[in-house]
Image (cartoon, rainbow, N blue to C red; front, side, top):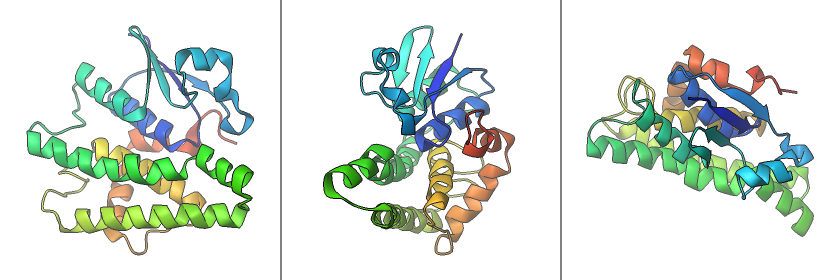
Length: 214
């Protein structure tokens, strides 16, 4: 199967998918869209993804947008190593953890929201950074509370192998660092993030290691 990933090096949603592809040992063609130059809004990319967002994974079946959908599709088509547990409760827990980041933290802090705050409400760079830190810190505190107290947490978010929740955690921590959101109050997240970064699949997916990194 031929896979083409339309993404951007700094996009945390793209980082999740790159790490998933690496964990699965899948080769893919990398196509970069510089978000700050609005390259993702080109007619060619809008034909693949009418939202004009990244990532979009082009497969033999057609284009597939949305990082969580991409990751779960990859897990079904290439089931080893699994990114979701075999049991229903485990899958629900992992999705619940992942959604703290993917559905609560990221949507209010992505680039288009930050740009809207600037263009429509006159929020300056300091104000945008404060906005980001507020919602990121709140979400990470909630995630830390769960990971530090729930018995299913292991070396990774769920047991001893990385999965969907770890992909989201890892990418968000790297994004948070750009805005000065540290992990002093989140030792469990810090430990899990370090375990992820120790794996070549995650390290290769990091923004700094992408061909379009600037």
